[in-house]
Image (cartoon, rainbow, N blue to C red; front, side, top):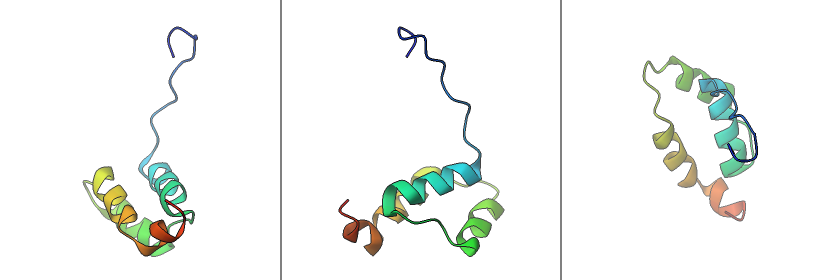
Length: 64
């Protein structure tokens, strides 16, 4: 990126990360309850969320 003169994007917020992870992994947005639970966690860990998404039936049926 440096060679191309491209600056890195700003860090995503927790809400943005969750939205992107859901869309990328299973093609849908998280439910309001899933968002609230994730944002209420004082120490959300993205890797756990991604592993949980990849284990869902929606991931298998989305061609992933």
